[in-house]
Length: 223
Ligand SMILES: [Zn+2]
Image (cartoon, rainbow, N blue to C red):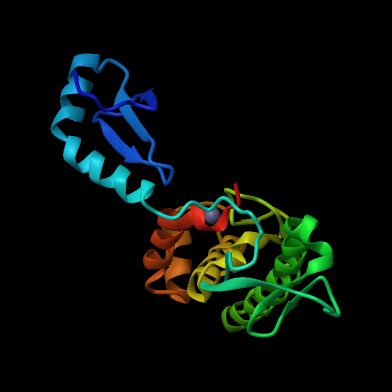
């Protein structure tokens, strides 16, 4: 027996076994319906060092559990800003190159920071949507910001665009990728080859940004 725990086994009509390590270091195994447990265990044993290395990598990352205390770092457009608690602020949250929160709202810091993020997310994303839409000659109905934690963006059938405010924590090029992805859906409401061709036209090396999101999505969540 291998001493590596399978956190989730998904059987389907695939032909090969796939191993995937999630950003919280869990092992997901995708296997054909009829693959025997012994066969799966054998593969895991052979891939043990790869699995361990990946799991260690994710485990050693700083935990993103939020205390909303002074000095804790918050991402804005990919840059970390340590939180400063200040007195006599004109607003609950002030950002002037440094991220400051009023001592009066500290017990409710999460809500106030979320509100601040949402406002800036809508502002930044709207500007980027307008920029890329104009360049590509695309029209959309509306832009909204929501709190989604797995879908960073979506495009409705009525051409309304939705983005998660959490996206504003990612680097600018990653935000641009999600904006471009949703704009491409205005032309193609699917993930066909034509769709990816539309994305490539606006952002030739989009795969780099896509990979960043896959690898770092945990940075955009506050457990
Ligand atoms: Zn899509």
